[in-house]
Image 1 (tube, helix red, strand yellow):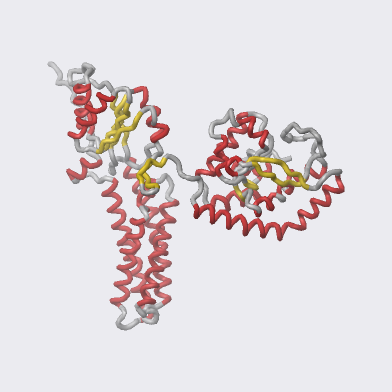
Image 2 (image 1 turned 30 degrees about the vertical axis):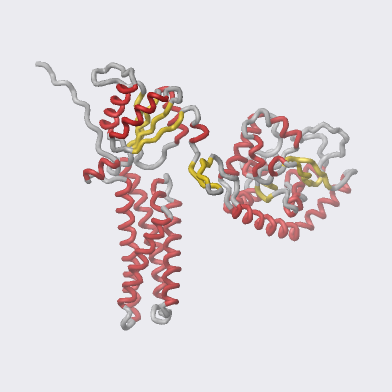
Length: 484
């Protein structure tokens, strides 16, 4: 008996196809469900707390006010969470940002509630103890609920209960690995499927002309139930590209085109407006005007306080240097600062005075280092005069450590984007130093590791990041690696 040919199973509906058939939850549907139950949980927590408080104190005529306030809390919290796109954070691998953002939305909600009660002249009627109790309970409810929701969401995505968007990449097979890596698709439920050009028709023969290629690709996208189609375009086949993109308008999916040869340029681009003209923004400034003001204010406050507290240490170091060896107390060296501009960086002298004009980086057990200098370098006290560079605006407390100009010139031709580390002010300490990349850089690999840390700091700057680095500078043993 002849067996019937095997029939390939159809893919389970996902994305926009689900919205047409209403039986498998999508990411959007999951977000709405999670938000609805979160609002109900917050409202229930506020109501239960108010009811318990009322049973103890038996206020008269305030039941309606407590109910209205609880409903306001539930609706406002969910509105704030939605406004700040907090539910997108549920896709993160760890729940921390999702939890803390929820706590922030609850706190902001109760600030609004307290303000409305005050403006409505209800502070006497609405018990202060009840308000504080509701705040405490709702904070606990949001943390518990979001922790459970995050865990359940991840489990639902893993077992296929929640389906996201199905993204189809169309292009030459040789280009798929590079695009998958550079595009960095992330997010729960996103599926990436590859369709190769040239495709094959129903009889299995390769499609040759632009019309047959377009027809075959449209058929494949229909079968795969694509929600988004990304065409990895080859600029040398403009006629084929035009026919394919026109044909794709026949399927219910969003269509995107990425030029193959310029992917590295356009991958991070986004539309922006400058002087009334719409343009593609390829790279933003390292720090915004607000960030620069915050960082400068922080530098001035902390460096001025450090000088006031540490002047006895600096005075003792100066006396020890003078007694230990001949020469000046301070050593000033020309180094690259912000925007590659030369600055004179101050340090306590830790080496013997030399007339050698050729730059030589200090090494471990360098014979030029004095006895006092070795102690100063191991404790980083030799860097303290740079607090005055910070006060003068030439340096910052945290940033890439400044290198000697001649040292930089050795590596600029060898390392791509080396000078990008000078897009912010150099620092007294930095992310590279607290990760152990301090001291001698006698090999290209050591310098590359340091530059990677510097560029990571520039791309991820925040005031909290600066505070973390300052803390690690003092208390992490990695900071003192290679010192001396």
